[in-house]
Length: 171
Image (tube, rainbow, N blue to C red; front, side):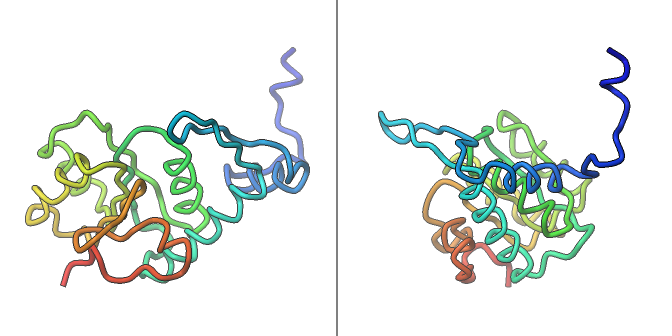
């Protein structure tokens, strides 16, 4: 019915507000399932919210300011969703980049959006970011969602733990 499409005064205004309202209503319910090896792992709403909150604090600790752009480069995974939520919780704007884009197109999107950090999900995506490092002047660093960051990227797990380190930060 058309009435179901009409906004209600008690509805949340943003994706983050909807997410947090759902988390409050059903914190122990399964929000996502993701595969690790051969096993499916359940993640509750409360677990997702805590990871997103910690990642948002990590982004703020890196200097991400409200309104700044943070790019997401990779497949849609649980970590991608965590980063998406964290970016919005930090008041920043997420700008996704197709994981199939060649390095030159990745650079174009970063430059066009003014991206200050880029979250990537694999060694292949990190390689694209490193290939265009000199061509993306607004990019302050790279965040690796799926593994150790090393010298070239900040590890998402360490970012969540409040220890972003300096991997991936430009001098």
